Structures are given as structure tokens and as C-alpha cells.
Image (tube, rainbow, N blue to C red; front, side, top):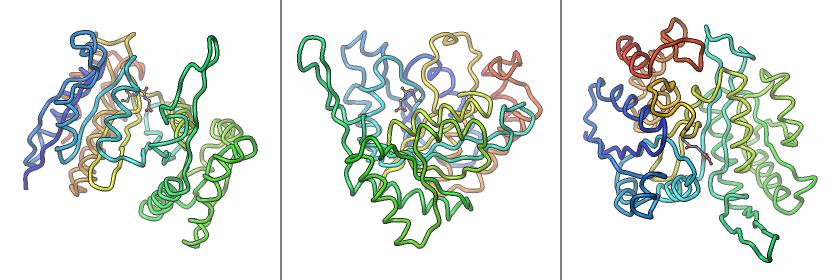
Length: 326
Ligand code: GGG
């Protein structure tokens, strides 16, 4: 069976780590057709459009999309791409790998982030000189859907602890609804869970990450808390993600375009390659997904390491080591 994969490297180090992931996928015995599309700040400069319609069409028509990174135009690229693939769940595993001197080696958390609403509603405007507002949208349906996904994910992947993150004591209507909907889902499923105020949760994650497994969160909280968890395990170069929709999906590293190191060939491609492993799993290639994940884990354990992990290996050398492991 053949699969068409849209490949959108985007900005900065996206141009370096995305080809690395494609190279890894190409070593597997799977009939992939990769179709590359352009998007990014550089495209906006050239054409005025950060996400050309032709690229949007590629993501719409593909079986899955690999996306690299967005810079200044993140809102004009990532949000529409997530919409195009109908993604309601952003799955962000933050896991400490042996051999990396992680701040918290016991970390194994998966953030299940609501991917369509909250402060990412894009309903934002300057209503008067010096006064801007943003509408935070939460619906019961979307909250139930992310909770269903989160509890099912925990069951399927063997996570015992499920936490619902919220700030319902302040955002009573919006997070009140999010919390109520998620608790309703838990009750219907007969599932155990905890709830946590998202600000206190940030502290608890830093102090005792081992107490957490799956964390179901509203949109922005998931974005922020997963980056925080990246700090516990060795940095943003290690966190992959999947944007899951009912009929389509997009896979991207959690990191952005990293303009400080872009163009130097030293970006850590782990997050992007692990995102490709999530793509494999999503398309039903479980065995190949495990092989790719284990190959990355082996290189993270024994090197070579890129500079973010204290080594001096290039993106290319790290990728070659992963391919050797395969
Ligand atoms: N690879 C993902 C990326 O470019 N992230 C940068 C960013 O601004 N992300 C915001 C988000 O994930 O909502």
C-alpha cells in the first residue's frame, strides 16, 4: 500500500531536521511518496503568503503531513495546517531518555492538548487605541472530545495517572466548562483521575514529574507545560508531537525554528525523527515505529550528541547514527 506524505520543512531549523526525518523514513521498506510544500517567513517575504494554497492542498490531500518549524508566522501556518487536517488533539510525549543526564530522569508524561480552542481562537483585535482583547473559546463538545481522547490514550498506552489541568477557579465559565466536561467523561468511563490548577501543576511537574502520566489540558496550558517538561528531560530537541484528527494527522517537533542556530547544521533532529515515528504508528506501522524510536534512543544513550545535549555532532552525523542503528 502506498502513502502520500506531505513534507513542509517551514522555517529555520525546520529546513535541517525535516530532511533528516525523511531520510530515516526512506530507509524503511514502506511505499511512501513524499511531496514537499513551502511555507514560512521566507515564503511570506517572497510571495506575501506564509502558507500558499498549494501547500495547504498538499496537507489536505496527503495521508499524513510532516511539518518542521514555524517562526514569526506560526499563527498563519501551524494553526491553519492543524485545521486543515482536522486536528483536535495535540499529543506531546515528554520522556527522559537514559544517558542524557536529564534534570528529572523519572519523567514520562504525555500531554494531551486541546488543539482548536482556548486563546488560540484567533478572535483578537485592538478595540481602541492601546486596548487589545482576545476571546477565549471553550465548547463542551471540544472539551469532551479531548477528554475522551486523553482517557483512551492513557488506557491504550498503560498510563495509570490521568490529570485534568485547568484554571476553573479564575476562568469560571471557560475552564469551568472544560473541567466539568472532562470530569463527566471520566465518570462515564469509570476512570480514575486527578485535577490540578495549571499554575500549581507547573511547580509540581518540576518537583515531582514521576507523579504524572497523561495530562489533559486546554490549548495554551498544554503548549506551555509541555515546553516546561522539555526542560526536565534535556530540552526541546527531544519532544515530538502528533496533531490528530478524525481522518488525517500532522506530525511536528514541539520546538520552533530556533533562529539562533539555524543554518549551522547542528540542530538536534531527535524530536523530528520521533515525530516521524509517531506518524508510522498512526499509519499502522507499529513495528517500524518502534524500530525508529529505539534507534533514536540508542543514539541518545551512546552518542553522537548534538551541541544542545553537550556534544559536537552535526544534524547529519546524528541522523547517520540513527540510520546505522536501523
Ligand atoms: N514545530 C512546531 C513549531 O514550529 N512550533 C512553534 C510554535 O510557535 N508553536 C506553537 C504551538 O505549537 O501552538
